[in-house]
Amino acid sequence: MDKVGEFLTRIRNAGDARHEKVDIPSSKLRIGIADILEKQGFIRSYKVAKDSKQGIMRIYLKYDEGGHHAISSISRVSRPGRRVFVRAAEIPVVRSGLGTTILSTSQGLMSGIEAKQKNVGGEILCRVW
Image (cartoon, rainbow, N blue to C red; front, side, top):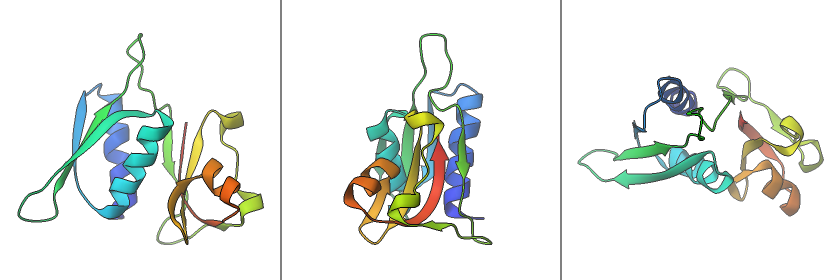
């Protein structure tokens, strides 16, 4: 299965089940996505624990006062069968700025807002709101 798709599905399912945290196998790509989600305020925090293999990442999910998950929707845009690339001017705005896109650019992973500011395009990995 696709690394990013599996990562997003585990976060989505854990949020729907109202879990406090979710454990996911670690990779540099997943750590980069989790870092952006933390900076944007969609998750509380994450930790990476080393083991004999690739490491385990524990993501602490965020909920509001009513117990609703901070992430209303998290979906994969570019997938292995259909890659989606955009220029800096074509980066989509998600939910009038309430959400964000996560892009893989030549300068590393970054949110759509940051990519527009740096005037770089890339592959749209996912969309979150």
